[in-house]
Length: 102
Image 1 (cartoon, rainbow, N blue to C red):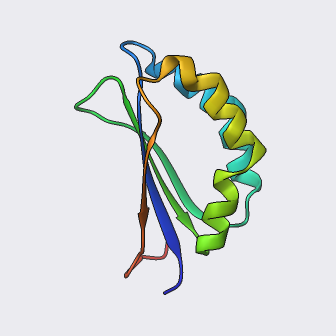
Image 2: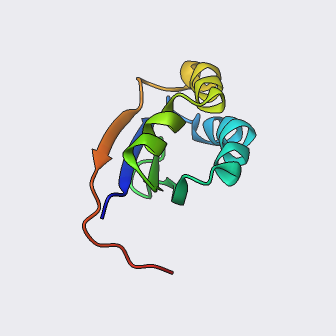
Image 3: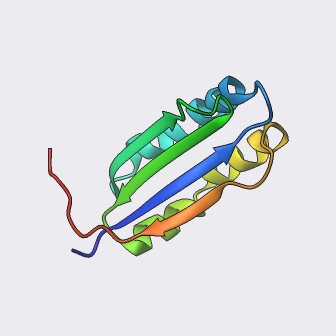
């Protein structure tokens, strides 16, 4: 399997998670919908932390993941959301070894 996954954690400032979601919907959702390199994408809220957002992204290749991290919409999202985040997002690169196909 040569696919790649990313797990990204965004820690927002207290009470700013909905604001960051609003910015994400504006910039990221349209870009992800148009990106054929995304095999799956889950934008989630951490149930145990009211100021945490987690995104799981499954890409067709490592290059597709790298390319998307430099996508103009992702860069715009980072710029616009920065003031509402406690720190830069934590990005974990993962190598899937088994995936259930829907």
